[in-house]
Length: 459
Image (tube, rainbow, N blue to C red; front, side, top):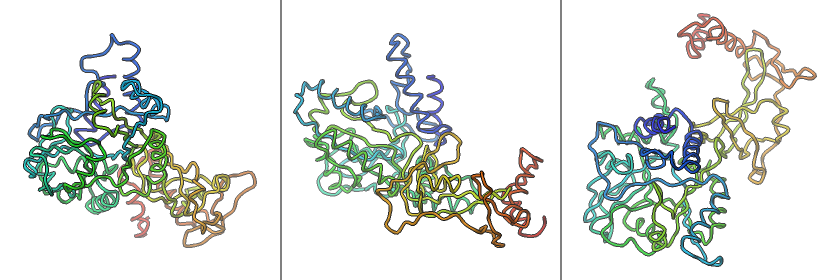
């Protein structure tokens, strides 16, 4: 299990090419933690619970962090967050009516980085690496927007600011569009794209990728950062850093959980990927007393969103015609990352499924993706339905140029185009099936070739 986790750490942190979803990775980490909790004698010296990230890869000079860049423990349920608050209360010997202020921030799905300033000037930038040693990417970070080269106002003589390098969804879509034109492999999601872009040997490539940075923590600092974490965030803004505008000071754990629910609903509308919410104890003297355990602080926790689900807007319902003439309604979505993959389309199965769940254009839908299954809209949030949204009406004609009538046989869920092989969509899908691995297995004759050959009347 330790080897398996180390393998996935290397793919994620060094190669920017994970092969499993975040949820599957989290399950591996949880399994390791449960084994260690039950059998303490089996804890390995190189246990994943004692490690952060992965060692730097060759190609960049190494940077040893003056203060280790640690990870966060995860919460997956409301009960986990309540336990977190109770642990704080017990550790600090607080009374039941003593308030615990938490700062809640969206958890950006990007690449952690550290920026060192001396006398207000940016002098060194590094990736997190394994938490102790990272990669020197100073030249690349100078090309990241939101990274100030000179701080505003009076700053500590030595200030190490930590945060997340990320790529906006809009910039990611533009990058993949250009890569498609250049016939290059497409990136799976903005996180992989940001990681790969920051770790380019040529800084000019990084400059073209339009990366951004949210600041949220400090490492080495020559004077006290303030009396509260919220105050420190205000100082970051004053020095010229971008701090997530959604961050909120919550007067209680219940208020922090309410923030989690609210931001989950806004997730699809954000121009950056988030995979949860981070809660941090606001009082810095309490943070100091709580200290660290293993690879994570006791005063912070990451509340992850449910695996493989996300909310987004269903912009339009279109029809896909299969090789047997079956009409499948498809939801065209505002792009959202689900299980590590950007999803812009999801199946709606058939007209009965749409009617049963009362799915309409303009709705905010909950999209689910499990393993390699095609994404689907599992339900809609009716409280967010626009007044102009109208019930779905199945098409009476095929969307092909012939506009042949559609029919639904009694007892069947599917509606079909009656045009048979006269329908261009059915022609194309049958040719594609004929050449596929499960039929004649014609290598090199894929979707694009068949479409071109058909349009040129070669077949």
